[in-house]
Image (cartoon, rainbow, N blue to C red):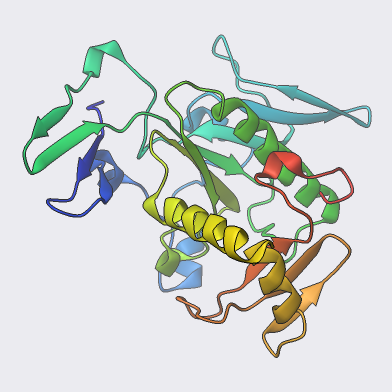
Length: 265
């Protein structure tokens, strides 16, 4: 497989991933629901594990106890409750000496290897068990599996940032309808995070308070407030970019999903 490439904008400090193989992704989304049901076998459903790469993480429940494993030596685990696999059409890939790309620093044409990982977390053996209808026990498996993969990926030398996201529906970019999330580990920190960090630091230096704590204190009393519990608050942001956008904030300071307590999970 050809190596993917990170290319820098001509003049802006903005990087984009060039991943030609992703145009070959399959899709089971159609306008007609009955037509969708008649399409090809879902590679994420139980029994079709051979249609995917070997799993990097599998959650198995045996005799009421959770066991964590991976696929190796040609084995594909069955009877799993959560399964994490390499994306067959990745945006980022781990180093491979056979397809190394020499960095280019040629004035306005700057590029580098898109090193990292791109994984798919299959959230349930049940095709349509999306978060809105999922069992609480299943959601806990999903969050803990995301934490496990985050913990592994963030320790790679060439990984600077790990992004966890979920597309729902064809219009959002999902190519398969089986409940799943994606994990991308990349060699750069997105520019917007650098900007947020700089502004947050400046706010603290000027006011002696955390900007996000102040945002929460205001939004929890605003008409944009949606819901909260002991650990989290949910609200629609003041300047939403997308329709129906909402933010989930922890009430205590946390820098990553790894800092969640068992109760918060």
